[in-house]
Amino acid sequence: MKKLFVTLFFLLISFLFVACDGETSAIPTTLNPTTVDTTILDTTEVPATESTTTIDQATLRENVREKITFYKTKLLELSGLEEEMIESELSANQSSLVEKLSLSEGEYYREDLPEQTPPEYPGNGIDPEFLMITTDTLNQFLAVLTLCSNFQEDTFMEVQYDSFTFIIKTSVDGDQLFIESYRYYTNQVNDSIWTDIMFFDLISGKVIFKYVRDYNSSDHYLYYDEFSETGDIINIALNKDENIFTSIQVYDRGNHITFSLSNTVMGGIYMGYNYADGSKSMGIKIDGSGNIIRQSIRYGTLTDFWYTNDEGVIYLTWNLYLVDGWNKCFINDAGDDRIYTDEQEVLQDFSISINIQDVYANARLTTNEEAFTETLMNLSDYGLSYSHITYTQLNSDIDFLNQNFLSIMSEYNVSLNMTDNYDTLLELFPFTADESIIQEILLNE
Image (cartoon, rainbow, N blue to C red; front, side):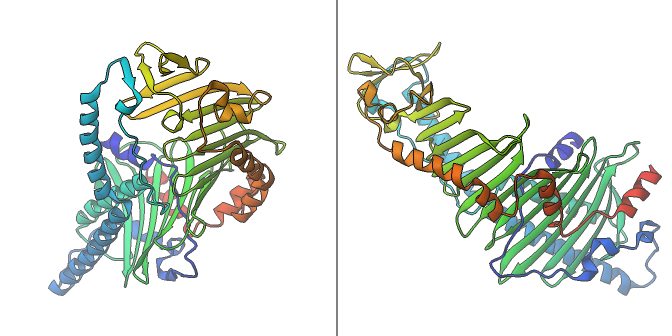
């Protein structure tokens, strides 16, 4: 259980800052964690001497519990969890029907292949997995608050729960809910401390959610997620140990675009520019000199066509469901599949992959810039026809990336200077962990 709990807190890099289309969400100064009086860490309980005090504590606790439950329910609704469960059940039923067709190798006519069903994109920038993990965190807080026998609002309380010690406080003001929590292993000498600071509000009946995480364990990462039902969403992750920018993702609700920028594992910078409906995903890798060394453009939710140019080596993928001129295929469990026009095998230079259960049929080819021509892309060189994405459209999108990637970065207030990006994004964090509390935890350890 401990391992699962810790794992849940480290799953994402899915993260959110909101520009609320002119909406504002003022945070009361009484909820500012940097003004905390750390003497409240003395957790000696003082018995209630009057029944009215006990009633007040119970009322305050219930008020906080109701607010947490309310926002947890809202997040689950926004994640589309119920819809996902329904879609999963339908998908399972569809898969069972597909299995009856065949899961083994053999020859199939094109009309016998199952129909492809494009996934539905909500187009709202919401990461269901992140919201589900966040609601799990809220469930943990509900359990922790239940154990606070001497509950006080806007005051830190110390509780042992699930192998952890929690130091937590909560505040409610109208629709506003504030939670600040410090968590570390109980009865174990270590310097791992996890800080979670959450703020919720309703603006015109729509949820505003700000979430700062300061996770200092073997690595020290800072995360900031801000979400609005009506505004933009930005996800930020910073590596504090190395003091370098790590990643940012912006869901631009007005333009229905998801923009991302991050350091890459092998060095350089990666920029993504994706349409929210899944119709087009574009990405580039940039070296230390500011040169584009890799381009990738993928069309369609089912990968209608995928182009990647990695320093002159070109990788191409076609969706065979969109290719005309072939009418039969052979599924080979031991190697590449094959397609035919009547009895004539075609695309023999390609790697063919057809799957009946997961319902895809792809043709892949590796080539170079000189050999990549319009007649190759439309497959007329091979006696077939592909026209869903044209050579002209592809080159137009390539030119768009080459000519505009710097201005796109500027639009989202970042640049090729990753040190400057780190400082810029750190300033967006509305809350910071209270270092005096963390130092007191370390001293007590």
